[in-house]
Image (cartoon, rainbow, N blue to C red):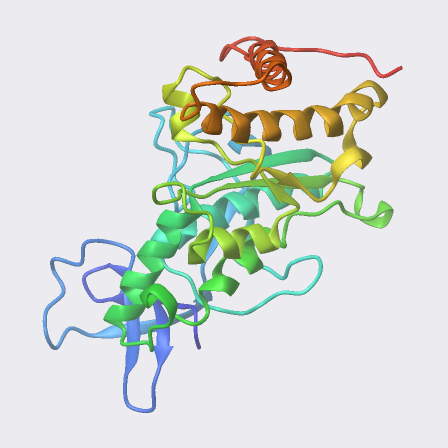
Length: 296
């Protein structure tokens, strides 16, 4: 069956991706240097799964949930499939070694979510995962689509991100919050993978390399950053100033770019630029500086 683990005679494990009438496309979970033509392979009848337990908290693991922090083995009495149905709709598609990392993280986060914990999982980054998936799909001769990605690359991420949810009272009211990171090429947010992920998430924070190099930290491009949750997740004080401040910052950025080519600016424009610069300085924050507030 698709997604089933198979074992070669020299011990290498693989995942069956393509099931044809006369052949099976398998992706290896190892270097496979000892595999030769004519080597035997057997089906295991198992779908990829990982051990899960409380002992994983604070440990560093690889895509197979094996510890890589030098602190010994991790005891576990339970296991969980790396791919499981999302709380809402889901899409079935097989995965392989490079894609086990985000699914392994999601499976561990779900383990704690269903034990009344609140978990945060950060995917860094999904664009690299999509590129590796594209390479594998081309090797398996799957029909390429836009930017040579296979047609199901959207479901690669949707079935992963849709697992983030807040469970019902019957399931303990735990939660899993997903924060996917996507790399853009030259700041192009209209590329295939960024637009796919943006369409799945509740908003995006766009970090600009130009702002970062200009010493503006955090380097958030306010004009492109969007939240679909909006004021529903803001405290009262933030809600009162956030909308107006965001508009002023976006207008200031456009005006600042225009002012670089203008030799003579009127008084109103100068005042707006000065106000925007003060607002930008006010919002600068060092890496280790924490800002706290009280909800009133």
